[in-house]
Image (cartoon, rainbow, N blue to C red):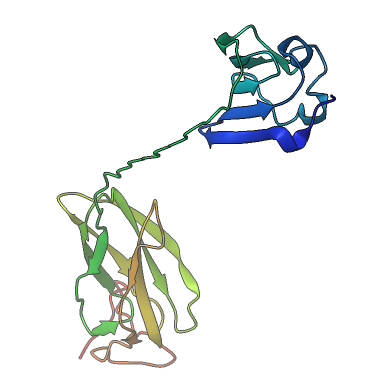
Length: 217
């Protein structure tokens, strides 16, 4: 009789391996002939095994490229009822070793009253694997006021200073990790006012002495 797909059963499947069982009234030589399993060639993979219950023998046969059946081992030449007990136990174990890495930047407080024409000293305390930070000054609209200052972290701290910008409100200092800008901190807003000690103030102008120094009262 020709090949019957209804008589082909997968007993065990796992880890890219299948143990097949095929029952037929054909002889072993007929089943092992080339092209017999052509209908299911896509399912039979090299390295699988087949328990063959043929008309003249019961055998365990390896599946080779083609697919074709190898010589295998004859289990019984006098065929009788075949009972196959299958049992399979699958187990797996996995583990992950990981440690949380904390990276933080804390901006130190600085003077609340900034006077135009002076400097703004700023510093930050750094925790974690941060090798350098970038300090930047931004106006009330969030626009960057160059330059951005990149400072190496030493002993967990980094410090620099900015020239005070023009008189205005809403200025902020931002500090961020150079390698990961998502790790950042922004200061509270601050104002920059005029120097009230100058004798003359007009549109932020200054009355200077002959030496060029601002005259103060």
